[in-house]
Amino acid sequence: MTDQPSVPYWHLWTDAAGVSHQRRCAMTEFAWRSMQPPAAPQWQGEARHGAMTMVVTVQPVGWVGCWHENPKPQWIVPLTGRWFVESMDGTRTEMAAGEWSFGGDQGCREVDGRRGHRSGTLGEVPAVLLVIQLDDAPAPASPCGFR
Image (tube, rainbow, N blue to C red; front, side, top):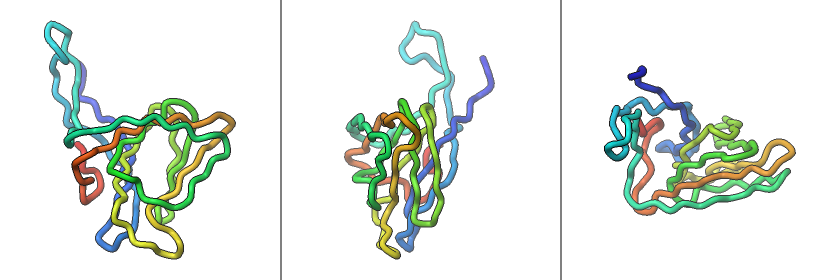
């Protein structure tokens, strides 16, 4: 068995004043078990929060969205290309394939024409994103709610 992993992710969240922020977090609570015996064990971490919907979205080269909140609490995983997310506090993160973030910025208030976040494509290829929306569960009320 290898050492227990730590898997990083970005968490976009809303504070009590209605302002969005981003924080680098990590999933650190993993169990060494089989997905389905007799398969060999592997490290498994869960971020389960009820029913989910999966969406694949393609952002064209040069695409930049306007300020908005995530429609539902959701995981966003870039499959190809690069993209950025900018939160209301001015934090801008850039992610490539294999990096991921949790969009939980629902309930923001508008400040200086900004509400939630804005995002866009970086580079010369479209950004293909896997989005896993939590259909019936609220986002964690503070950053790094997934361990």
